[in-house]
Image 1: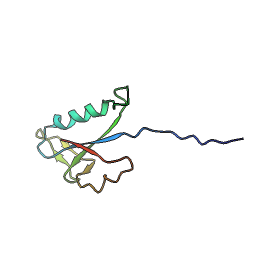
Image 2: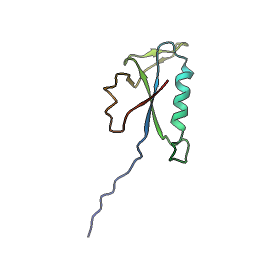
Image 3: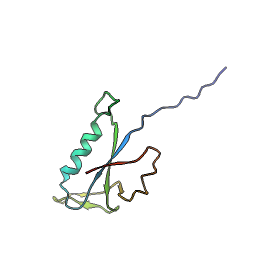
Image 4: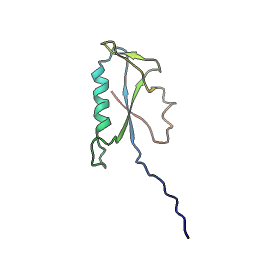
Length: 95
């Protein structure tokens, strides 16, 4: 009797980095994040399935404040060392 190992195959998601900084308009950060978080990829037919992983980037790991006073925390910083060697590939920054 043959035994087969079953693996869950998860599609590799493209990571999109949105750059945040002190004085940013919150909508300029959140708007693109919402759009990419719900957008399908070219080979996906369903919008809203989370085809993209969206993260917030900043110059360093410190929180930054929008022009309206909203304090936001980046996922990581623009120093390429923490994320460029990810097994999922490189992050694409959106400005």
